[in-house]
Length: 244
Image (cartoon, rainbow, N blue to C red; front, side, top):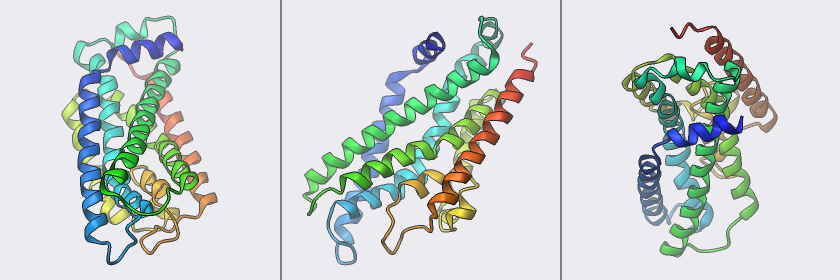
């Protein structure tokens, strides 16, 4: 598995990935800091307000969108160069090859979440928000957002192996993320069945007027069930597909 992961990391175009993540950070935190200042009459000018303003963009749009884009990147090389047959001649089971792509995507999302935390701290100090950082819930929410991406990541890897066109994959990502404006207003017991919504549910703090309705036990069960479904379907599809 280590060699497969190493191979996947070598194929990643890191300059493109880094530029995309940094640009997302600039947009997210620029909008979040602006909203935090302009809405200070309605919400406290503190670290929690800055955080949930950022999650309104990062968790609702950019995190699920980038999960799909990165999944397409991880399969782009094989589609473009007809390298699936060469990859499948390696002495590894097909399910391990697919799993290595999922794990690589999970690591990319984790990297994105770490940078999100760093940008949160930097932005808060730049605009001088008040109060103390609620470290425990913030770290739990950021880690939860990463875990909540697992069903979506598995689904996107599965779909990315099916679509030869990078354009179709991108169109699917954009068309799936835009309805989040409406879908995330549903209780998590309904909305979480749609994997593009789960990062927002997991990351948005509870206890404020804008908090989505999330019942933790049912939310976790939905995440586990949908991940297992996408994992089984993805492996079955990848193993039985004729790549000739």
